Length: 330
Image (tube, rainbow, N blue to C red; front, side, top):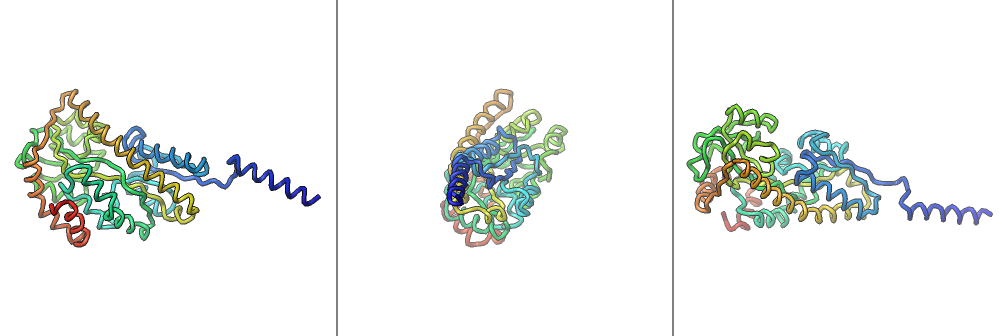
């Protein structure tokens, strides 16, 4: 009798396992600071979709868009504390805890997306990721925010001298401010929520962000010129809370890594498509767009070389030499 009941219980348990109705399911929150339709948001949505499919529904991740759980700094701190499981900030957010990430903020470091991918997806990128677990974070790779371009209300920037005297929005990071000084502009530190009004009232003349972000913030309404300076490259970094990661089975970790890897190509494709469409849309509304010649970009890069040297010691001579060496000794 007991044997019959045991077999019946085992059969019921097996059926519930097979049907996926077991209560032992992994659930998590994914904080995203941009809207769902943004390149960042679409990357998060694709990652969530892939994880659910690969895990056959046993890992369910709920995305929270539009910074509803806080800004990049806040949600990254929450990730370390284990109250959020996933975030995808820009790498700049991590420079306060891992100085080596600052190498990615060097001005005019990359000439194109292929150079950025070579560094991020190669040994240097892995070395940077390896420094995160000690900070309570696990990095799953790199996604794309895109190249930063300059806008202003005064005149097109076609040569180095056109930066001279412009009041230019800077982020709080010192490297941003030193870069603008080197180019001849006057840096004015401002948070993103203050930017539109500051440009509208001419408190500042210009700013630099990826083209898709310029469109999303509607800065073309208060800026006349968009110059494709490509003066900095922004990368997002999908992160997992180490406290959460350490509780996962090896198979679940593998699923997350595979999903992040597959999402990478998709998200970068979305980012580049959005940059192109945003540029075209803003031009159609009257914004004047201009390219920068290779010769002028080379002059600008040469002008900011002292900024590289200023921050080389902070990021470490080894990683500095490794990156610049791989990029042809720029």
